[in-house]
Image 1 (cartoon, helix red, strand yellow):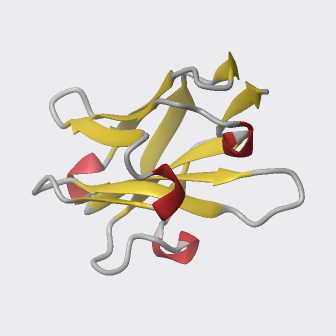
Image 2: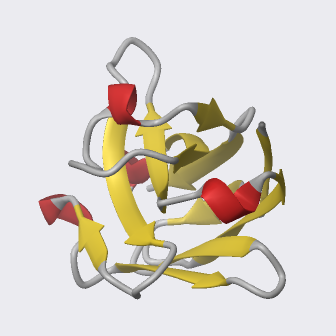
Image 3: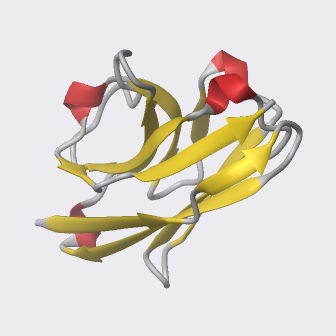
Length: 124
């Protein structure tokens, strides 16, 4: 089992920045990759970014490329999402997720473990 706890969400004006954190505990040695997803009211949960536990390969959805950066600290068992130039359309509940399985990292069904989410609200 892997437990995930997100933090760092909040209210920010358009153009601002936030850094989300995800603390992992439990059997993290089994982790293949970590991802960030988001879900806006009335919409499907969507992929935002992912990072392999080793090596440092990363991936992003097109709309956040160049604005968001995913990173991780293996020693601290932490994953981060630095979000810059935030826009109102980035408003959503952001989830941290962990997968122990090899394969595509852009679909929700690939991930076995999820956090409770942290709310990000961007005002115009």
